[in-house]
Length: 369
Image (cartoon, rainbow, N blue to C red; front, side, top):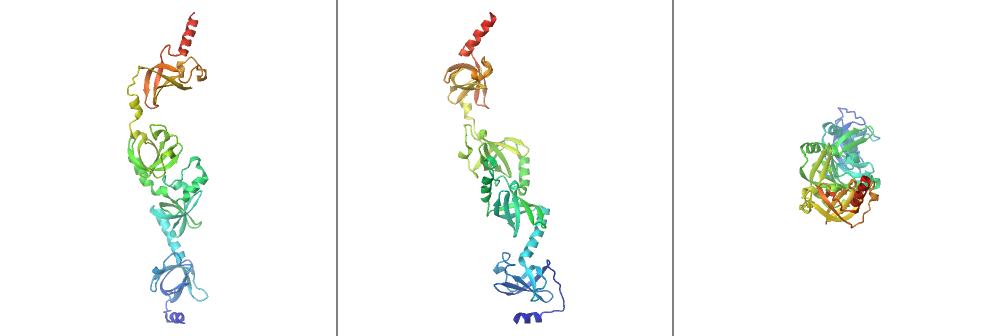
């Protein structure tokens, strides 16, 4: 009766027609655990069920006298009330907001609530959006050896509950699809970084990937690869034994090819091999023990951690399998050059230093006769 009396007291001289899908503003006049009543222009009352208000506003935000804007679901129900929805109004505003955000290229934050093998699902003001794997920044990209889909999925699941800064790259309300990109949100920074980066620059970054062939390092919106051979002056067989995701590292830029960056950690320190060969000079006679031989030639250990190489063409054979050598056999040679890149001494044979050279001389003498 109280509600009916209130309706009769309203000014009904100005009639307002409400249409489904339109928005309506009103003032809260009554609240129960199940619904909220609003006084609307035109002398009518609007009703919002708790279901259509849940998750949009808290109980503290909805009080008697509060002005609310809601979407019209039904212009008039069996009780003559205008059925309203705060959820629908919130979604309408969110869709309109997303279109503006995309057109203006603004960066917004979304919260990840689900992962699948194609990427991440996120909420923006109650709307579901999709963040594809290809649109993740290097630091969040699920890089795994062999691109195993199950491992990728496991890594993506680690992002559930996190907030990501993204740009909206596609909005289609008709199909309900929203696609966002974390990579695009950082592209401006990445472009500026690449523009100001030069070979020889030293930077600090974070390990964003650990694979069998090296580690990826992210800094200032870009990512580069430290190849296995550039991790340390010594031999590194498994990068995962030395580095983990998130490790802070310092690197030096050794190559720039478009967006592809080559980095090095070992070159930040002096090559210890240089000290080991500091007493050797080109033209110097050296001796050592045979270590191994292959298509390149014969390797000889001169002193610990210093090897020399005789090229195969110095031996009278067509294939290295024909070499008559023994591991540990003594050999002598002359240093032709010191190869700092491959960490070895290039050697040439001294006449008479091996059995092969003796045989070669014998064959030469036979030909002369």
